[in-house]
Image (cartoon, rainbow, N blue to C red; front, side):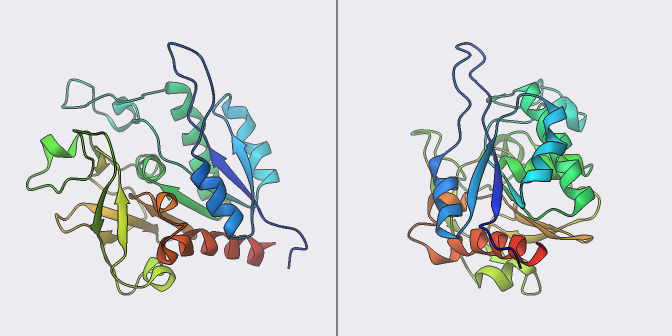
Length: 241
């Protein structure tokens, strides 16, 4: 049993490519880790060679939300319907290596929104580049008029780890225009929105991986079901140490 607080690595946005200002991440991730008894270590996407050193230091990882993955990484292109929001090749490169090493080491990991999409693509899966144009009868997963959150229920696989963690019928904060299309190797869908879009995935060979399409950090301070995802990550880190 570890005699210190677990250290959780948190991925970050790259600087704005025009202004070159700021590596950033939402304080909500850091606060959720703090409530669970962990310490956050921020991991800016500067250089992929940092990844092994990060993973030597941290006990677990949160792969956070953010901009779109470059479609060429799942054999598509931007001529498909796509906002091309926030594509950053350096972030893709760093986080793809990070995801591969997390799988190799079975490092405890919570993937959120973009983080889930990164993990899916790394495992050979694909994405809908824009669900409002590519998916029939889609729910409003992002309020494009105000560029703000939407809220909806998700249905969980009753036999999944995420059901054991959260309990049934969580209300989720949604903020995404892309989603998992074809699942990568070893991944299984364990949660769905009412429109059928995949909302969470687990890995058949890596039980320490949980990935959700929604943003639990945005409501975890007031919603115990969402905070449980961060509590579970911390408990995994304590158990492995």
